[in-house]
Amino acid sequence: MAKQNTVSRVREIAEPIAAELGLELWDVRYVKEGANYYLRIFIDKDGGVDINDCEKMSRAIDKPLDDADPIQDAYTLEVCSPGLERELIRKEHFSRFIGADIMVKMIRPIEGIGKEFKGVLTAFSDGEVTITDHSGENEITISQKDAAWIKLDDFD
Image (cartoon, rainbow, N blue to C red; front, side, top):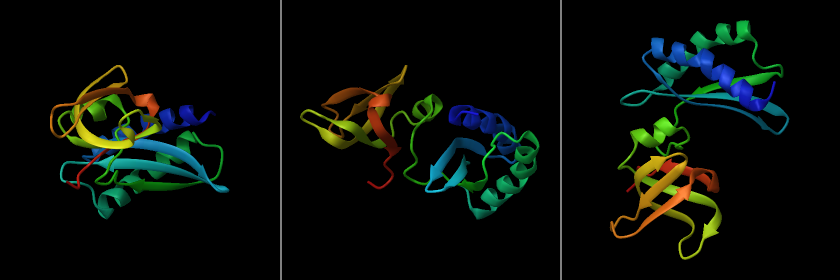
């Protein structure tokens, strides 16, 4: 099964379980690090998640994952918080955080700006992200696919 299909299938299994527990499924990632595979399920809720939320989600999803068997390789399941500097990935993430401070790392530098910059997320549509600098005077629109990552900037 292709990596994207694995992530989609796990998301289908995990979303209703997270909802039952009063959690939001933030992201699912299936990655190989060294010789090991990791299935990472990121959860969130108003006020943030704690270790107990992660443990409940891990226990609740363990059997459904075993029953569905969407992953053929041996893997380690990790259930965790997306953290303060959460990466914005899905369109609903961008929509939810319009007006929030963000930081961006581009794959290639932008002339006159560089590879990394900060600003306010002012719009998102069809994979295009609009960011305004903190002075409110300069605006740039980038393609989400040209960014290495776009994260919330909760440290200003």
